[in-house]
Image 1 (cartoon, rainbow, N blue to C red):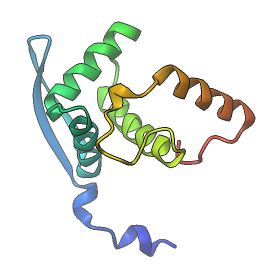
Image 2 (cartoon, helix red, strand yellow; image 1 turned 90 degrees about the vertical axis):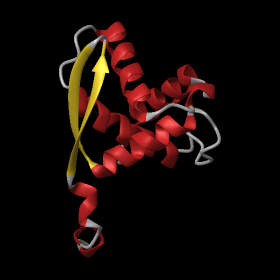
Image 3 (tube, helix red, strand yellow; image 1 turned 45 degrees about the vertical axis):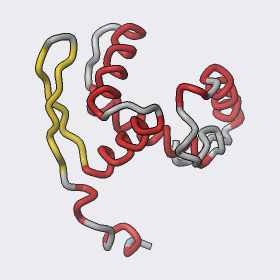
Image 4 (spheres, rainbow, N blue to C red; image 1 turned 60 degrees about the vertical axis):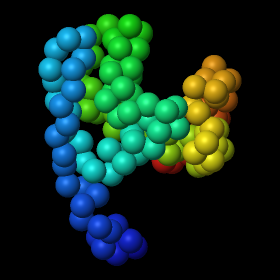
Length: 124
């Protein structure tokens, strides 16, 4: 079992620091390359650059919940949820389908019902 994970490309778990400007302030985010790849895919689906996606996520998170405590952790969870929602069939695997075109309210409602029934994907 472990060979599947142990023999994966070590570059996947190496970290990379990326700098960006959020609300006029310079900041940086350190994530493993695996997460940067997933975030890049999410950004590309909506014709955004990776920095544009990060700034947008940060802004919307701040607007919805106030101060952003641990943005890197939030981004890792975003990646995990994106992959889990793909596995559940909620997010099409077709990368030509923008995330912004999906019915987020309906997806969140179905996800909540699955969680209540205890049938939420173990990946989520």
